[in-house]
Length: 412
Ligand code: ADP
Ligand code: ASP
Ligand code: MG
Image 1 (cartoon, rainbow, N blue to C red):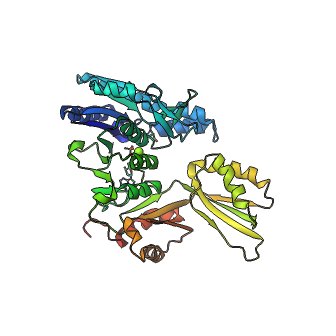
Image 2 (cartoon, protein in one colour):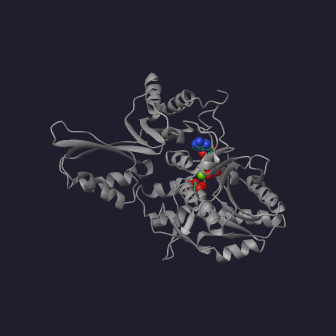
Image 3 (cartoon, rainbow, N blue to C red):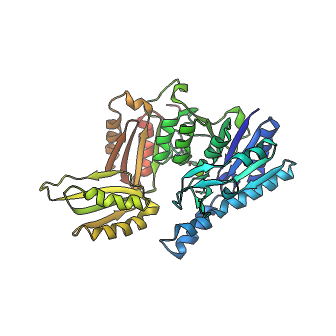
């Protein structure tokens, strides 16, 4: 007997029959004797539609109103699931972010959770009611609705699990766990039974969208045991059929490379003809940081004459219009600077704790891509990850070739 937080993603609540299926899963855990809080996403496709409505009005919109619009999808599913549970004789109540309350900072569109006042919520759950919490949303201290960035319901779930001191946070989705590569691209990818927080964090941050990066960050910090599993399989979460995200010490066999990820959410910006003097990078990146734009890969070319230089970096594709606006303002201070941009790129990464102790891992990546004639535009590395930026058209070929090269194919 324990306290579980169960999170159901968009495809798991896409239709009324799917919501009934979710209600059955919740009922099964209650029958097992657990207290349950549920976090739900919007029905599949709904958030995309809501985002599209905002963009249809303007490419650059007031993020506060964007949040008011896109947070609405989760309100619908939490109410519907509460109804489906009540139909089964299970006392259930929906909770919006503001009702908990889940307080966030004021960075609309990608707000961070600052606090969860879990007292009333916990009392309700411990009294035997199922709390059905709308994921993805929170409220600022001045009472405006915020959203936590795409995929943010994962973070809502982990944050609620941490606040309630839950025994486990089960993330139900449309695949059976975390795989060595996106199973939609690599059909012979393998389910990973246990993965360390650190590897999962790197995998999420470079594109394995099965978990939002912040949810892993939070799980690692608060030591929340997380399981990723399918809502379309018959086994209940308590049988642990999915992937467990755990401390590194709990993993006996380490692969050199545990996973390959890809991200098409990138856009590349190149600034040409920048003066090669101290302070230029700060001039470019400070206003981008102020606009809450996450700059990822960065390369600066050496200038042979020490006068001018080129700077290339990537930003989230959705932030490209805002980035170009900010840079236009910056260019007034840097006369002669030319701005080029392309959304036609993908980032491919290899991740593995074993990289710390093995040499030649990156070389194998470069050789494999070269053999396929794939040109690398930018490279970045960390202790347990290598990422490259390539033309988007080669995404599948790159991921599949690397999956094979590192011996990850199922049956290999
Ligand atoms: P949900 O709507 O349940 O939150 P998401 O679409 O956000 O689901 O995340 C699940 C998807 O993540 C899967 O359908 C899969 O295509 C994708 N994915 C990408 N990389 C991986 C990976 N390494 N392992 C599992 N799933 C992955
Ligand atoms: N509905 C939101 C999205 O599609 C949040 C989530 O599903 O996690 O991004
Ligand atoms: Mg998701």
